[in-house]
Length: 316
Image (cartoon, rainbow, N blue to C red; front, top):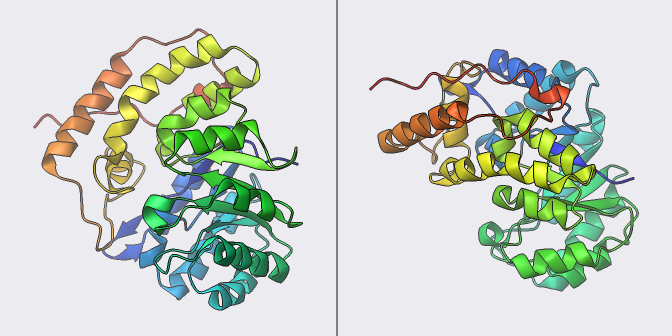
């Protein structure tokens, strides 16, 4: 069975260098009312490289507690030390998550044989579902489509988060899906609509932390073959999304969630820092313009009826 729809890679709220679980609970309560398909804690949007082992387990524990089984949970669990990662799988299994999102090994830049063996070892070590994550401009090594096809034969490798950075590779994967049940989810936010209309299954999208219902609407409209209505809605989002990645993710998103009153602080952990004053001004203006636009289509899903609090941009 494919993974489909909108999956939210959760930010990890911090306050005074501690995990802010009150804000984290509010985030989960908010997103689980939006007809999303699932939650992904402790991915790179959750600043997982700066989270301690104790915090990792606490965040996973609170995710499952706050979610209360409302939507599936796939935890971010990847690395470039295969044996260590296999041991970490036991923690995820303890919390009964549905699966893991696992990035291709980074920095040590294994070849395709090494990438294949890495994921095969993970697959053999767990019964959890595995979604692979290809993002070569961060890892330093691309997962070729032939490698993805080989790994799709593993019993519990169920899909991929595609951030190949190569539109031709992405389209070839979409047009030559490994098999019917293999899920192809985009992680390239600006390619969300393009991926959907070429047969993609949805997205794991940092930008969907904002305007979540609109992302869900676009997904539903494409699934209903109403591509034109979906495109009109997409135009609103496509004009705004690039602003969210002008400085390192997730700092612009945290700023927006903070200004909307969902987070108590926009704090990130070093080496990430708070966004620049110039970007704050541009985000303020961009969100004000976004909310000033008329509705792109009279069609709306229940998920879009209630969004984040209306954004009030700073006056200065």
